[in-house]
Amino acid sequence: MSTRAVHAGEAPPEGGAPVVTPITQSSTFYTDDDPAAAVLYTRYGNNPNHEVLSGKVAAMEGTESAIVVGSGMAAAAMSLLSLLTTGDHVVASASLYGGTVRLLKYDLPRLGIDTTFVEGGRWTSVMRKRTRVILVEVPSNPTLRVIDLAPLAKIARERGVVLMVDATFATPVNYRPIEHGADVVYHSATKYLGGHSDVVAGAVAGPASVVDEVRDRMKSFGASLDPHATWLLERGMKTLAVRVERQNATALALARWLEDSVEGLKRVIYPGLPSHPDHALASGVMDGFGGMLSVVVQGGDRRARKVMERFRLIRVAPSLGGVESLASMPRHTSHADTSAEERRALGIDPGFIRLSIGIEDEADLRADLEQALAAA
Ligand SMILES: *Cc1c(COP(=O)(O)O)cnc(C)c1O
Image (cartoon, rainbow, N blue to C red):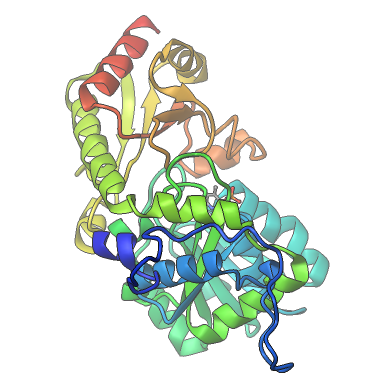
């Protein structure tokens, strides 16, 4: 995976050529003498930076094709608009990224596309004749649930439904949904793929027949990625495997320590802990448990806010997947729009703090967590 991250998609070595893909900061390209030749235009997603990065993503996800787009939400929206038309129906997991929920709840219904959100496992009972897509996140935000894709893939195949997975939290280093029966995978590349909190981007990987449709939607809706952002993303992706392996190791060590020896916590939520409801499944299908780790502190949201104020090294900000550790309270960020009741149903209890573990030294992160929890 690390070899693919460094080399896949790139031009073969040639004397005098740059080792790094140059930024082709050009909107348009000279046409050759053949009037029928394909038009190269950056909004079309065929800038050389796009081509290289798409090849890298496809190689890492193990798909026939891939495309990079302007954001994670563009990846979700362009994919859904490619697979659905008026009258179609989506079955989606209830624990999806807030922006995706808004897209499904408020935007797609304007086009006559409805979604049924499913909690737990009652997928088949809500399927309709016009169900075209099943959409899930693995692992989910912020309770890090890992859905077993194999039975879902079977249902999808039997009914000719597309199984689509947002694998932002997993990255292809830890989990490749295609290997477990998914048809289409997408990412907010803003997070781990970029890895440095300096670029907003998205990626979609799947069969060429789907990716070509996504490209057409991207052209029409103007959701292409700027060449400089594409270059930054390629630079970030080269270190994806080493970053994620480090984040896996630190998050696992911190999760064990928090659960075993830290007072004042109600729950430590991490798929690598035997106490997590999906630990057995995650151990079977994932190569690493990821860098996301959640805790529920005793004392509810009041104490959680105090803990957040006391962090010195861990930064308080939404988003995730960067080299710096970030903390957020989902009730104020990703789930600000949901009611207390809905949050409880999703497992977001009072006192819930979500941590995105960076690549700092584990001892420093441990010391920061220790002092913040003690002081609060
Ligand atoms: C951030 C995020 C998105 C949206 O991505 P943007 O790049 O911010 O548009 C979608 N899904 C998940 C799981 C995310 O974390």
